[in-house]
Image 1: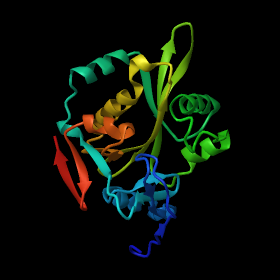
Image 2 (image 1 turned 120 degrees about the vertical axis):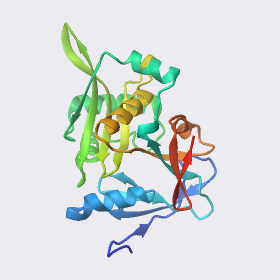
Image 3 (image 1 turned 90 degrees about the horizontal axis):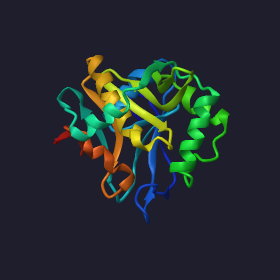
Image 4 (image 1 turned 120 degrees about the horizontal axis):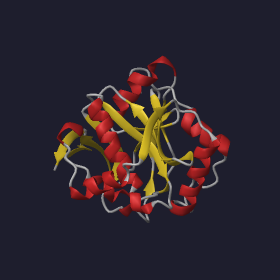
Amino acid sequence: MRDGQQFYLTSPSPCPYLPGRDERKVFTHLIGVRARPLNDALTHSGFRRSQTIAYRPACENCRACVSVRVLVNEFRPNKSFRRVMAANQDLTISGRQPEAHIEQYELFRRYLAARHDDGGMIDMTLVDYATMLEDTHVETRAVEYRQTHTDGPSELRALCMTDVLSDGLSMVYSFYDPDEQHRSLGTFMILDHIERARRLNLPYLYLGYWVEGSRKMAYKARFGPQQRLIDSHWKRFD
């Protein structure tokens, strides 16, 4: 318990990142007027948000999940990152209120089918998706990336659910068009969020967990300099 806040522990379940291991999580609720400052404090302590839940790994014999945040003002895009930015210059970017609509859901379903067809989210309905996006008691934005056509309506290419914290932006969940591989949209959304944080004078971009030995999470190490939460202290890695 922290300042009257109740925390809970889940039962063991298979780890989604490292085969042959189990995971447990500690979690609490983010609701009401305390949700925003509590989300700030818990994010600084390595928690992540999912709807009105803040959670953190609490595995007995493993500490592989490490929270990562990019040092926004020191980040400089390398040649590869500059190519990604150039490939997406035709996209229009807007931060909206987190309101679900069918175009988002259809892209979300295509992304899951192509990238995570064996995951736990594959059976999510439109109602489930709307809950995931809209059920928030903190400051959240749905950042849309659209390709505009002169002869027709724009097309949604990617979306990121983003929390605005007191010291940074937190990329909660993102998905993108799996048929646009040449754009490297996952990388581009991170690059764009680094710039968005810089414009807001926020020093950090929170990327969630980096997991050593997990191919799914290896990309996060590319964005540096960064800090990793190790033994309750944020330590710099270049």
